[in-house]
Length: 241
Image 1 (cartoon, rainbow, N blue to C red):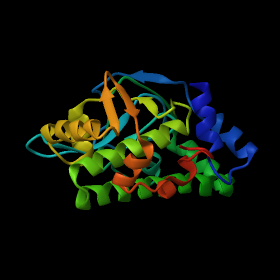
Image 2 (cartoon, one colour):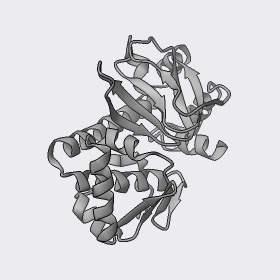
Image 3 (cartoon, helix red, strand yellow):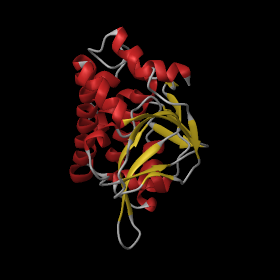
């Protein structure tokens, strides 16, 4: 987890070594949040931002009848809710999809350090811009891509993001989520997720079983997904595939 903290700070592009050290000194002790728990509720007024060190956290909106749409997925090494620094009230909830470990830094400290260190402020701002780019890709998938392509794109993105923090390699990565979680991410039913995964498996592209994703044919999976990793920017490594 210390390595993930270091990776999170290291990819703050444009921030100096001193900037990163000053930010690291403000980050509190890590804590565990169990699967299914809400880290922040829609409508709440957060006073901290969190770095995710283990597990998966969803940005979720809940409809009156109980339906859920996941509009973003945070992976280890991400600032989970850096944007909340500028929000008076949360417009979505943050939910632990697995047991997670997070460490927090107070908004008061973030404001002070950003005022004192403009390069760090720009680096943190860039992180929120990349989050926006990821959100646009998800929106494009919801609006224009067929079900199997949506899933293919999601798995391509997660492989790249997890490989960037050392949690994926050889086209494999742990993904201890449910098909229901995936359905809420790509905006289709659980039945359609199952069928789409079966199609991708039969075509020799992808398997997802036992909490592990295995990409058997990256080139064709990325082609079907029309996956271009440019939008991930600083979330990339030099050899992402």
